[in-house]
Image (cartoon, rainbow, N blue to C red; front, side):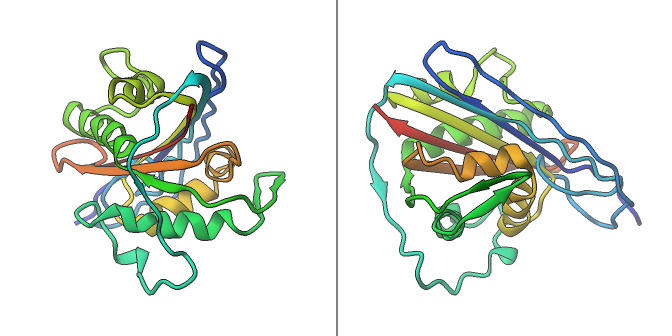
Amino acid sequence: MKYWLASLLCMFMITGCGGSSSSSTTESTSDDIENTTTSSSEEVSAEVDQSSNESTSDETSVNDSTTTTDTTTTSVDYSLMTCEDDLSDVLALINQLRIESQTCGETSYPAVAEVTWSSTLTLAATEHSNNMANYNFFDHTGLDGSTVGTRVTAQGYTWSRVSENIAAGQTSAQEVVDGWMSSEGHCANIMNADVTEMGLACQVNSDSDYQRYWTQVFAKPR
């Protein structure tokens, strides 16, 4: 039996507290895929790609407990890593990308410093993924009007810059990261030299349109 699914990507970047925010969206269609689950950032049957990123710079941010992951050697198969796995391991994959130059759309980015894992940013990401999955929507703005900036602040993190990538439908960590890297705005968020910490979450709800909802949050503490 074939399931028509759509995968979406969205990124949001905020620069400056109360400053301007920008979001971009791209959409494309492709053939249907059998037995694929939806994710808000990649392909699905009748695939629809959406990307939007957000980054904000503010003057408040509190350092959270972070852990550093060694990215020099890793035997993790990210194509097998799902929402149910420990997503902190994806930090190594992100850092592998950051320590090499990348081309995002038509823009070339030099290698940048690695980021560290933040449990507080992960809580903010988890909140948003849970809401998108449980209330069946895909957007950077929560149904309560929250933004990545307000969600991160609500967790007690004082930030000077914050950005967010979201995706829906992807079944693995590799799939969602590949989708983000092939989207100019999401890729730019990943390669942003001004952020130092990252959180990542995914929530599954088989009754929702896309079934799997991913949220990645980057920030720099004040």
